[in-house]
Length: 310
Image (tube, rainbow, N blue to C red; front, top):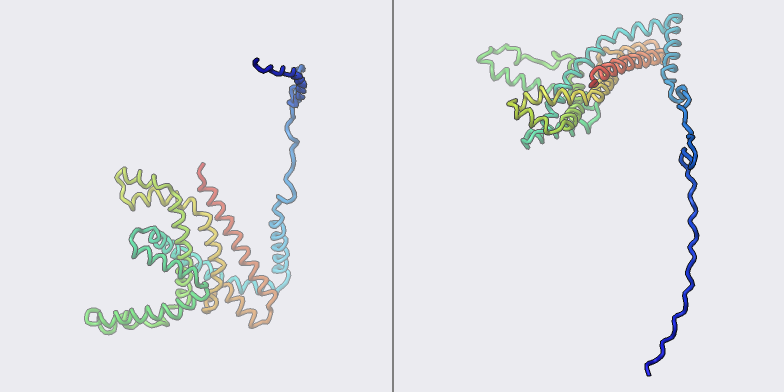
């Protein structure tokens, strides 16, 4: 006989719990025709932290110093004597900055060159300049580089004596013929040329390569494409760091006083050492530099806004 199969137990059907209906959290509730409409946020005034309180502090300090200049003969005399060095400071800053822009552009293009000799020469210049303090560079240029250059000029004059004569200007050049202001200006230009080189390099590299290729495909030479297509866009992008470097050079121009150049700082040093009026003298000097930098910063900002693409 075949074995009897054990009857299967009837399984109890599981009762499913009815799923709870989730409440509609949207503004349109189920079964209703109304909706909550959020109104526009209430207008809020600028927070206290957004107010330019630093401008107010500077204005108050300027008002106090202006009042002292007008009422105190000591401050008025100091202000007049220091201000005599303003033309020298402006001339040194403007000349050195213009030369630094030219040096930086050439060195920046050298940093982008595929010629290994040009690239390594530009890189050596940039790294050496960025690794030496500006004050040390001023001493090196004024008392090492320039005398060596004068010796080279004298040697060239002696070599050209049969053509130019024995008493030509090249053979008779001396170190004293080059004033300290020229030496200081050249040192600042060389120092800032290294920083401007990296600024130009970064600005040129930020332009898409396709724009240069498109300009070349239209028949432009490399220099034409650089002058007409790449540089205008690059300068617009690097204008903020260029403006910051101009402000920094205005402040660093005070270092030329170590060479005896009669700028603002040298005038202040001479007056303070002669009259022993150190606090009012250097208060006045700091106020003049602060005023110059603020005016220059506003001018740079205005140029940036003017050059922004509309």
